[in-house]
Image 1 (spheres, rainbow, N blue to C red):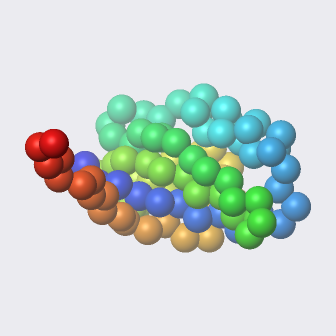
Image 2 (tube, one colour):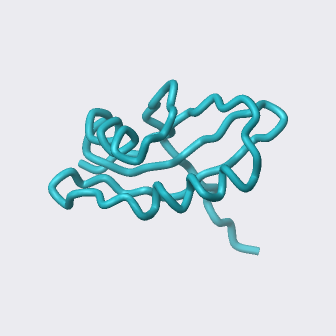
Length: 90
């Protein structure tokens, strides 16, 4: 079963340039197919000096492995669930 994970990185002094370079590095990191991990996207919250990366994968351990391979300075990996509003006829 594929799950969704949010990786939290507290990053004092992060700049948009450093953030963008890290996103490129994470995207370029070769993730073995047998691990089943996929980098989805990320967001920077400059005022809090925190970056969140979203991954999908089979386990938290696999996502942790991918983050370590990409040299991400993460503090936490959290499983999350998404929901979208149900469309209503106009």
